[in-house]
Length: 111
Image (cartoon, rainbow, N blue to C red; front, side, top):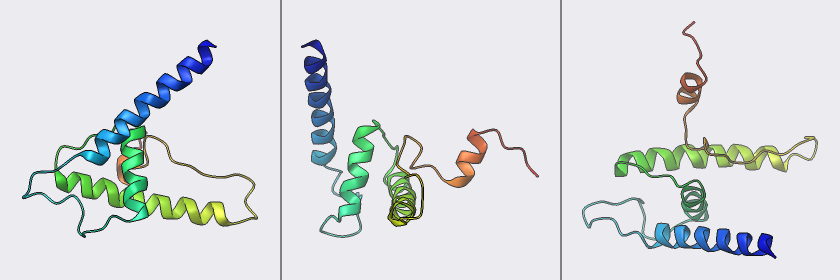
């Protein structure tokens, strides 16, 4: 029974975070999206932001992270569509990071 309560509480928290992300209204002079109607990719990114409790300082950083996420999502979808692969890929908390940022984070030395 306690597992069910924990699961429901977790789902409630996730729903509240997602609701907050979807209801966010940027100031009138700031546009987070370049078009009037949101795409499936936009909704996937907003879900990702909510799932991993991401926040970005500026609208330009938001756009950069969204572009990086969408590019990685395209790669993941293409990889997972190949029936010859023996495993699948998915997103994690670093899906909005660039390759250079990940190299630096992992301690790569300059070559």
